[in-house]
Length: 455
Image (cartoon, rainbow, N blue to C red; front, side):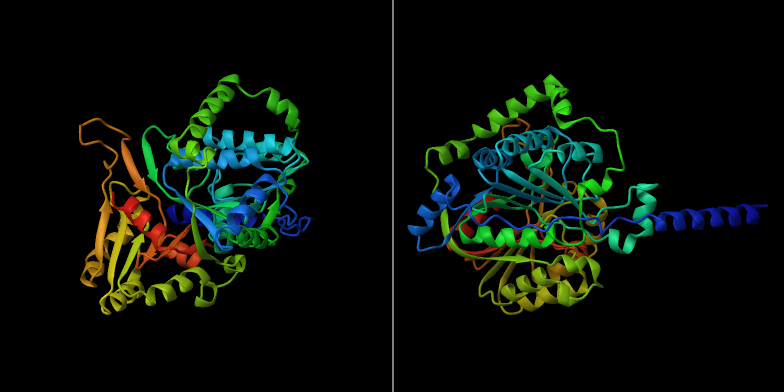
């Protein structure tokens, strides 16, 4: 009897997976090719950037965003100043205070005639399709989901049935306004990344970047936006009886609107925002390079040919003369990583790695995988530091957040070169996902970031 039940269950399971496997995403759904707007030099941001770069030998300008409220405030202020275009590319967005506020400001920009292109990875974005479809109704807003899971049947069964492709994700995070000013870093669009989660603080970092570097960032966005894995939101409509955008806006809860206005005022009142408004911020003029994996990485077998970003970083680390500082939330070096870092320390180069402890890590399985290499990486000569979960609690005993999680992804080489972006040093980022970031050549900026990381 048990054998018969098992056989029936197995047949049913195979049938379910077969049906799920037949549910496909319409990768051939019609979409229009588009690129970043090039005629934006006459915008307010364009004029400001042109004047600044002329006074700094044509170099690009940079400024770090460490505090979450600063990072939110700058994004919102840039949306307010957008005149022609906004290109946003994120791994994840949630329907929380940050998500609602971000969308409200994008709608205001679109109402002014600004073209908005919004590219979201599908797997961890928890905003419902219906909400995105309503937002996508705006004539100036276009939303695409990257490498989406089929909506036919069970989401999880579809994920498993197409695991080979579905497991490969776009982890890039870029935000560019008028093809003039960008923000690149580790933050997604959710409360915990901007200090709005009352319980947990994510210690993260972004970089304001403007000048020619912004145009290079736009080119990377265009590659993903026009790729066959970027599916227009219309493909998921399925003749749903959705409210009109104007109706949905009119029915928004007044409490949500009031809360968003309160957060908006708070974000624009941060010390950094006041300094930016009063022109007291000294940006860092620098040479730089945008480094990104290609979206084709997700459609090919894992190989060194497609590990563009991590290969470029390894080449830079190999040239280090005195010190390498790695800041990464998730650190799983594997045997090859142990050998690589030992080859660096054997040359007399100091290597420091800062990562999460078990208590501060928001992904316990990742810590379990990391822990097995802890002794090996120390034996390889690496100085290893783990973040304390109570790092936000003040010496006086006054409590801040209940816990702190490191989410910064950065690399410092000889306190001269700084990389900041989306890359974690774990197999998922290195082998499976696409990642991107900025390599910046500026000793003053590198030292400022080092001070931020170690205080």
